Amino acid sequence: MFQLLWILLIGFVLGLIAKLLLRGPQAIPWWLTMLLGAAGAWLGNAVSGWVGVRNTSGIDWIRHLLQLGFAVALIGIVAPAWSTRRSR
Image (cartoon, rainbow, N blue to C red; front, top):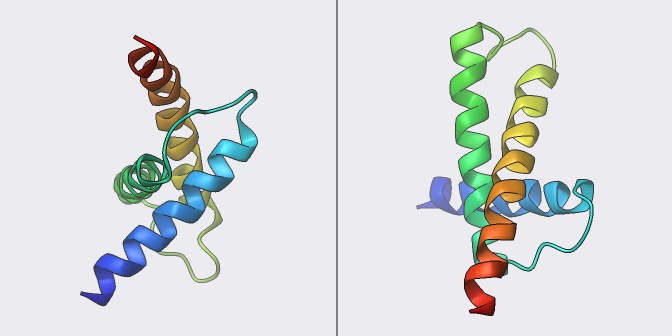
């Protein structure tokens, strides 16, 4: 139960950082921001494991950058689609 809450909290934080890094408004609700951030974290973990940099002796900077990069990409793709869908 607590792991799910932790995943959603990290997803929300990653989603907010991703929205700050993107230009222009991202008119998506908070729950979609949280889900896209969590999906970005999941994809970043998967790719970092595939590349072989998931577990290092220090802070896993590459893994965290991959997580953030996937969150930015997902929000960058979904936000315009969401706003055009909602405007119809």
